[in-house]
Length: 201
Figure (cartoon, rainbow, N blue to C red):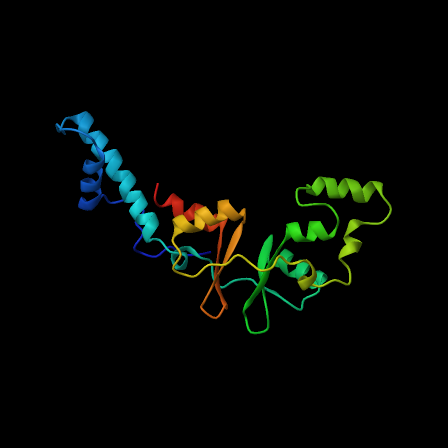
């Protein structure tokens, strides 16, 4: 499980810069009444949340070590590995630990000829009502045959806000974090993002 560094508080502390930024956002004369103070506080709080989110980087929230699938693994080995680690997807690494792609349940389903939105019960229903099982399409194939490549990756300094936007824009569930040489140093999943946003609520 990833750890969020000590710089991220459990409760947000409003800084003077947040208050000043909030006051600039409020148009007109400010009479310090309870209502106005509440408005200033709410706007300052939003600035504080944004400041903290902008200060959080991939390195602060990523999970490590990373469970990587080897580029030369066959699909039987990869499926067993992912089942053992209880993960639905993983980066694919070459022998030097560099990112080669990403593989997920969707890639397995696509190879089985099921598309990417099939449910587990649809698979069971098909296997029970048809001769043979769709899983046979996975035999004698390797990770490199089904992985998604090139992988969408990021550096350790990418902000949480930028990562969130990337998840939405590219419709991904996991983001391998790599160093300058393309070696995998961590991974940010949707669960990591949820945890990072929870501390800034």
